[in-house]
Image 1 (tube, rainbow, N blue to C red):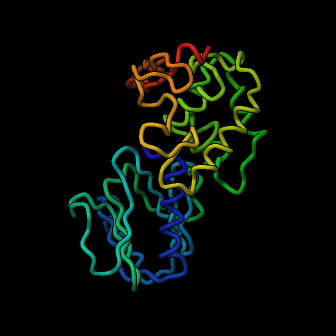
Image 2: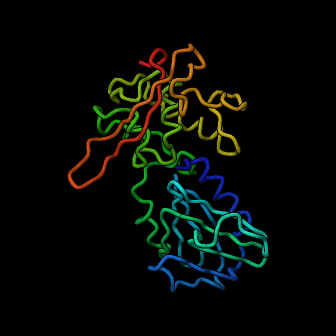
Image 3: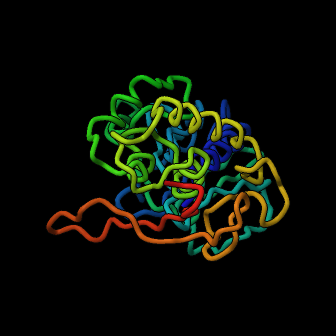
Length: 264
């Protein structure tokens, strides 16, 4: 699933070609919103909020979330699409550009006044102008017995981190993802590191946690099961970590990676 830095770049690129322009085409290919037509309306801006995208058009906001398979593409008018047409969920055009949302996990059209229904539950946005470290800390410590690996992934605590960041941040701080919040040394420092790391990566096409952009050297632990730790040489381990499943809900487990020697 794309993480907050990827969604930030997506919003930035969409905003560059769409903001201040008038829509010449609005084709929403989701049954609930199939009759929505914002052609002739002005696109005010495209912004990211954590892993969510808001395209503000006229008095409406088009809310999308990429989930696992989604992506937004930008094409000069008349260019050939790089993904099949049946995967398109929305097409927004202006005179010069065509923007297409493919296989979006979430797509809805809301009145601007109702944006909070889509993103109001999120914690402080790590890449947003209103970042609030104190509020993130308050939310992170609300359940001191909860594993830090679950807290980092919880968008209600901080918006923008995904599974890759979760694994790499725990490694950088030398803590196991399973360690309870109450036992995490310098939690404010971990929150600060989360912001500094995602800020450092937000404008990079290749995300790195090591400072090295060579293939196979950009991550310490994520996706490196059984490979030697870049620091100590110990094989990296992998397991699932999730909150207790409540009745009627599926598994909440997500894979975690760690070095059994560098993290405790």
